[in-house]
Image (cartoon, rainbow, N blue to C red; front, top):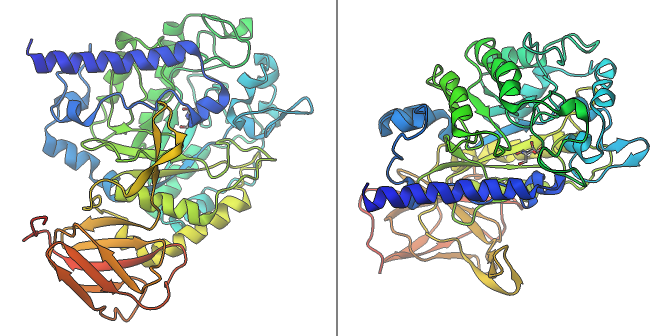
Length: 510
Ligand code: FHN
């Protein structure tokens, strides 16, 4: 084996070992929310992914066998999209963060685990679940109004409750509740009507109500299984073969051209390469499908999935998607009102686009199936900005300006104990073949925006929010440019400056 191949293999093992170690340590529910999540380390570095991994998996996945051109074609809509809606919705929206009169810390959808709720008691929520306020048309319309291009909804979260009509297991919204409707089917129809992609989150590994399903640790739950109820004990392989895989097959077969994405989550050491390959055999029957890096068993999937953070330089050479909450929970919690501002959410989207990633922003409908008003308001505000400025986000390429501007803190440390990088929040940039966009957060007091390392020849400048497209004066010398801006920002969150500047004929840096 060549040195390089050996190096790649070692990297793969180290990445897998990091995941295994963090799972074996066990995660608190807040950790599982991504604050110190299992997936903070990308499994592959850009260096390691610049050459395809040899298909050494028990079953080769599509990523192992397709050509770069095939991959580009498969990923095209997703790369263009940049902004999607994550929906965490299930039985946990009934307790909404409170159990037996006590507010349970951590994320809402983890309440069964965090509060050690016995299986029978949790299952008893199902007959109470009647979310008649759910309206697929309105949710899809909300995603569209927000400028989102795809939706990923929890078809089954770690509690094992299927939010669709499953014949494989009757702990599901059609068989076990008075609601008797299939929201996934309704969403699929609406997504088709309103022209937006739909993907399914599927907790393939953790399942707290099915015998043999895995559980990550919270509280005093004991190894090796971290179960808290005998009813959870069983055989993982059997769970996989009798529930997770049959349900995955249903999800892939029963909703027409959807899912466009399968979003796996929290792989544990139980998911061996052999077991994961059984899932891959199923996925391989759907050659257009996109799936993330959380299957387990050493499969790296299509996308890196940083959770609740934006990687400082993105993942060069890898597709990636930052998933984030608007408050501090994915599943609805009635008393979590710690919502980020629209300014933060929008600047996150811009920051992510400038590094070549997608933003998967979560909503958590309540037990009536209604999206909380705070989330609706923020999404609509984001959509208004995108109506005007979307050209600077969708289908763009990352910044030309290299490493993110900022400085290392004298006082704060990062998770490795090194000085923390504090990004400057003055502006960000995205590009297209013939344009450079500068999303200005902090309007320059001097009225002039100065940029260094502008490696394309600029032939015109204007503000995207100016319907008259009034040309702005500028002066470019070598690779530095000064643009004269109007006295005031056109948008307090981000005003987009467009520089007409073709990729062809780039200026060598001085
Ligand atoms: O444990 C889950 C959590 O509940 C939530 O679904 C997030 C979303 O990315 N994923 C896991 C934690 O990484």
